[in-house]
Length: 367
Image (cartoon, rainbow, N blue to C red; front, top):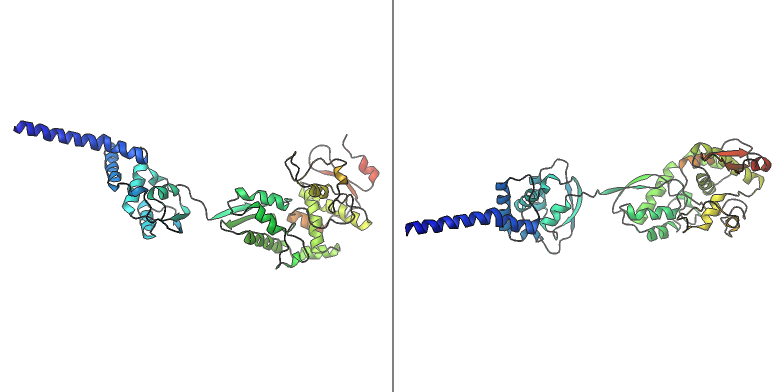
């Protein structure tokens, strides 16, 4: 009888060992995934038992209707400290439970420092996985020289800012008070300064536009204003001309010469005959998938628009792009030339040949 009881005890112990060593880890793996490869066999059993003991608390939120809170993980901060701070913030119900899940899954070694938006309506599993991918509180937003506002708008969906292209176009197309250089302007086109901006992710469309316009104002120095005055141009007219110069060349060193050509034409009463103004008037070209149709056809040059400087004398009614500081400086301090014509070199270098007479200009046309 005593031997039989011994057999029963041994069998019970053996069954417990089987449950602990194989059944428990298998059940945990089905629910929470495989254990970290860094854990020993004994540690897998230990943490599997702990996770089973929590009986679903890992996937249950600390609160059902929790609001979002900002939570920062500092560089080099320990897992224990992160867990403690999460519990203090009310984002998790138990720091030890959070730590055990991290160690079991191996996520304790891959938490990313950074700023997070978390909620107590997230479970421990949700928060642990969320901390693997820090989304910075700020984004870098870049505007390239020569972009028109539609091109800026198209860059917004991938910028990290929660601003739609439609909202941006609507706001940028309206007059904007508070900036003296925009007096009388129909929109902000031309004054959305090309630069790299570090902005909070929560930036609104109005805050974005104000940031771009303030940057333009910072670069609109007294030297630039004086240079515009010497050319007989208001700030608005100078920006309009600079927006054309920007689109005419990829070579900043050529901009003062190109500016001189257009200023010479204006002084002589000639039409500007600027291709970029026609491109702007034509708008988006779905076949080429660009806002700047190239090349222009003879029919394109006849396109009826107040922006078409082949058909209308003087400057177009408003800027056609957002010019760089190089283009603005070129208008303020153009080269001293007698040129009235220019033509892109035929070697694909992006440079131009400049001439005084139309006959000389014709000799530069590419075959």
